[in-house]
Amino acid sequence: MKKISYLLLALSLGMFSCDNDDDMGTGGSTDNKGYGDVTLHIQNFIDDEAFALGTDYIVASGDTINVTTLKYFVSNVELISEDTTYMVPESYYLVDGAEKMVTIEDVPAGTYTGIKFALGVDSTANHNSDHDKADLDPVISDGMIWNWATGYKFIKFEGAFKGDTTGNFVFHVGKDENYREFHFSNDGSSMEHMNHKVSSMELPTSIMVMDGGSKKVHIKANWLEFFENPTTIDLDDFNTSHGAKATTLVENYESSLFSIHHVE
Amino acid sequence: MFQFRKNITLFLLALLVFTGCNTKDKLAEPSDEFRVEVPTNLGPFPESERGNFLTKEGVELGEKLFFDPLLSKDNNISCATCHKPELAFSDGLKGSIGASGKTLERHTPTIMNLAWHDGFFWDGGANTLESQAFGPITHEDEMGQDLGQLMEELKADSLYPQLFENAFEEGGINSKNLSWALSQFQRSLITGNSPYDKYIRGEGNLSSLEKQGLQIYQENCSSCHVGDQFSDFGYHNNGLDEKFDYTSEEEPKLGRYRITFDSLDLGAYKTPTLRNIAVTAPYMHDGRFATLEEVLNHYNHGIKDSPSLAPKLKDGIQLTADEKTALIAFLKSLTDEEFLSRYEGK
Image (cartoon, each protein chain N blue to C red):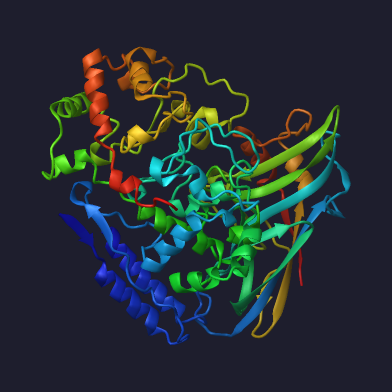
């Protein structure tokens, strides 16, 4: 059985490798209205202030943080229209520092009323480290795989804090159970997944992709949300993310970290 | 006598698929399939779940990388520094010392018949050999290497660029191909020609003491050290400690708990094979026992109770002095001299 599945895999890989222009996603191109580009501009913020490394910020507990590393994976981007969903192939994007700009080419033209993406790496990819594609490559992602257990750090957030005491914080969030999806739509719809939480929020305007055109989606990540609601993170006591602590952090950000600022 | 595993059908099909696209004429061919010689009592050779099939070029590249200190931060530690072929790829130390100079908390695991294994490191933290390779290379207390730096060093080498090209259809020098080559080499390390193996295959005999020990092993040890791989590939707390009140949830001393966060995995480690056990002292995940006698004494009267203790070990394993002597004689019959001397002088 095992051998047969390898054969099928080899054959299907072989077929795909000859047809690079094919739409790897589901649907989307049936009417063949052409293709356009969609650029995701993912920008980190502290409330309304653009985030920068090496700058002092005050979080909900009143503690001051100064960040040396902020890296995370945005993945599995889907563009959702009324009748189809375009799943962007191999969409694993590492945001490192203040912002990330990534252009998705050859998106089937259409009116997308929703967009969905994950924070983290899906279990299929996360259970292996030998990836040579784009940002999952351990050389490119640099320090995002654990060296004692197989898996990616979904978020690597490190720096110094000043509260009642001073010290360093090291937040590394990973593991399948902490994978989360963020869904934005302008028709009030919501989505669910059997294995993880999907938060549905508002998309200010539809993403209209025209043949040969380009659209830009500005995604805002407000990192103050990481430190509050429901749990206010007091860095004097809470400055690592071992075990269950990671879940506390995920519950803080899972429905509030991202918003779509605007589409242009 | 030997079972020659040849996936020729698969190989040909793969070739057909690869040559089906005429995009590049210089596609390196998957080349000669590596001929794995598997002693019959080991059963069929399990293929890589990542599709990383052995080729002659891949195994040879993996071997060169395995013995090359270029892989470490200061180019002074190779995989073989701690995984010595003559000690079944262990190193005889309680805790090895790597790039940082700090003594590691766990004893270097052996490398043999890993194609049959599932889960790597003492706690099974690595899912595949292909994923495991990145651990020791990058860990600051092991080889301490930066992967990007390593890729640059390999690319600047006079031989590696061509060797990677020859071994892999695409990618040349990259981290995936590095881990795939190392994994191919490790999968090629097969031991199954000890006196015990020859006895089981009807090619040789054991002394009556060894045979007596074999029977004692079968009655007392074989529920965890199962079959001719001498492991169930499971994780068990074998009663070394009674408390696991370490400060951080990721302490290596917590056993597999740090991977699963399951309290029944506290102090649980992978069942090691018994193959070549005479040369792989010291014993246990932390090398706390220097001799096989100490190991048997632990099972005799040293088991410490705790909620995660393996149920079968609650009462220990009671053996008389004569039984212990026979069991140790049997364990020594698992030494495969041919395997241990294969890389002599490397």
